[in-house]
Amino acid sequence: MKEIGEQFKEKREEIGITIEEVSNDLSRDVIVIQNLENGNHKVFRDILDLKDMVRIYAKYLGLDDEKLLEELDDFIFEKTSKISAIDVENKLKEEQEKKKDDKKIHTPYTLELKNQKDFTVVVIIIIIVFLLALFYILLKILFS
Image 1 (tube, helix red, strand yellow):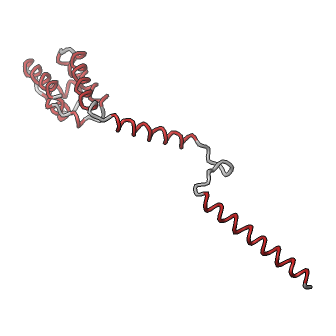
Image 2 (cartoon, helix red, strand yellow):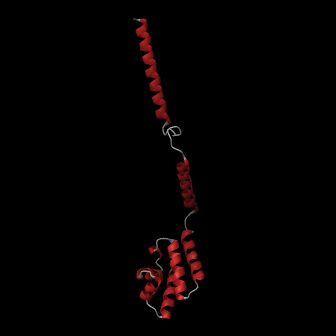
Image 3 (cartoon, rainbow, N blue to C red):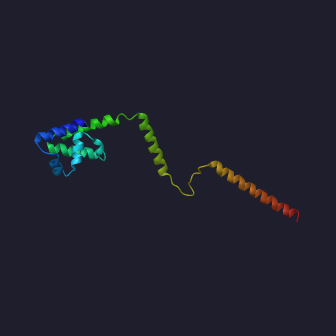
């Protein structure tokens, strides 16, 4: 990225214009132009914003914007290709799980029980209470 910024700076100085003039002509802040010339890509919102600025500035200075964008792509590839395949795979799995959860319909009829054991315990208690009540009623009937 620094090489791209240096090309911009050298060309601008060769033409003999100031950063303030570039800023006015391109309707961009001086700090944006300075950061681009210094190779500081982190100040841009995202890659698309950076690419757009490289394209605009290259055309403004009469540089080959396609060549500079290829250099930028190479720089980006170097940075992103260092992400391990395992990290990429884990991230993909996370995203797939998230999508699965988003697609489920959550209504009282389709909700999954999160804790099947609790449900079983509650059913057993209800059955025991019902049987005790039935036994109590039978005893009352027999001894009345």
